[in-house]
Length: 340
Image (tube, rainbow, N blue to C red; front, side, top):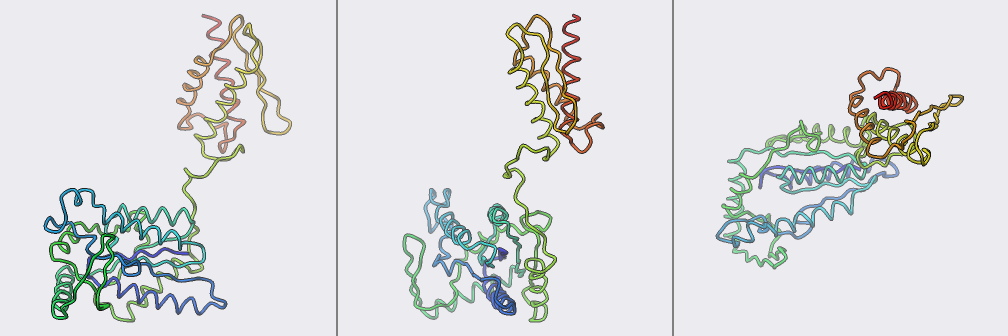
C-alpha cells in the first residue's frame, strides 16, 4: 500500500506530524474488519541514525569526506533498504525524514511504482525563522541537561535521554540552503499534501482525510508499471513504432531466409488475418539482395512512416496493414533497380 514521504525543513515539526499521521492511519485501519493493512513508521530515529551524518561543515569533517558525502549516502541507503523491505500491497509506510533532495524523492517514487503501490508527499510547511528558533531551543535545553553524546563510526549515537537531537547551527543552515521544495507539477512529488505549522486538529484531520481518500479510498488510481520495463509479446498490440519495427524486421528476415542462391524469385509474406491472401515480394532477377540493401530500404520506410503520415490503411496500428505497405514499398524499389 502507499508510501508516504514526509518532507520539510529541519526542526519544522515533521516527526510530530508523522506520529499524528501514524495514529490517524492506525485508527482508520482498525475500522476495517478484519484489518486490511499494516502500518510502519521509518525514520532516522527508528534506524538509530544520528543527525551528525548530515553535517558537512569544514570544522567537523575532512574535505574528502564532504565531497564524497559518504555518511549521508550510507544513511539514505539504510532508509531505502528499510522502505524497500516493507513496501507491499498490504503495508502503509511512512518515511519521516528531511527528504530534501528531489532526486531522492524520485528514487522512492520509482520504487513504489515498481511495487505497483501509490505514493505521495506530506510537506510540513514552517517559516524558516520558526524552525531556527526550535533548533536553538533544543540546543539550549541540551546544554542545560549537560547531555553527553557518543557518536560511533557508523553514525549511530547513544544519549542519556530521548529528547529530540538538535542540529549544529552550520549544519542546520546548510540543510536549509540545500532543501529542494516538493513540486506538485512533477510526478514524483504528486499528489502533494501540505500541513502548516499552526494547523489545528480539525485542519490536520481534513488533510489526513484527503490523503486517505487519495491513497486508500475507493477512487484511488491504479498504479501501472513503467512501459519501458514491460516485456512485449508477439501479438499485434503495442505502440505504433514497436509494431512498425517488428513487422519490417520480420519481412527482411523472411527475404534473407527464402531467396535462392542465384537471386530472383518470390518471397511469401503471410498475413495474420484469417482468410487473407499471402503477400509476395518480387526479388530482382539475376542477383541476391544482401542484408545492407534490405536494411537501407527498411530504415527508409520506417523514416517515412515514423509519424504515421499516409498510413490511413493501417487502421489502429494493424500489423497486416504495415506488412502490405512495406511489401509494396520493396516491390517498387526492386522494380526501379531492375529498370536502371
